[in-house]
Amino acid sequence: MPPIAICSADSCSFRIELQDAKAGTSTATPEKCPKCGAAIISICPRCNFLLLGKLDSERPICPMCCVEIRKAFAARRTRAASA
Image 1 (tube, rainbow, N blue to C red):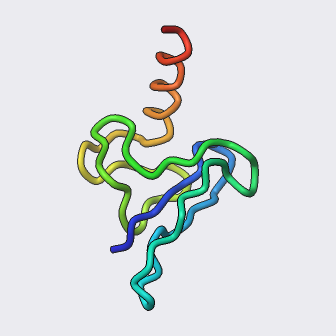
Image 2 (tube, rainbow, N blue to C red; image 1 turned 45 degrees about the horizontal axis):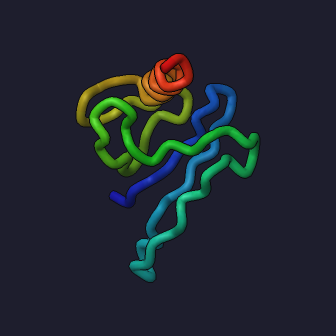
């Protein structure tokens, strides 16, 4: 399963594979979503596990710690902003 990155916005379904399986080369992770401009998530914000393979585009769940990825990312950003 290739590593992936997803958009952090609930309303956006953007996802990108971070490795070209045929060529075996990596793809740069964009900092912002090209569709909506929101931040991109490539690791679980709770356990730091690399996002791999197919995740539900509407409600992505980390396969390692079972947290809802976008909610955990939003909570982490809120904590960081209030610190």
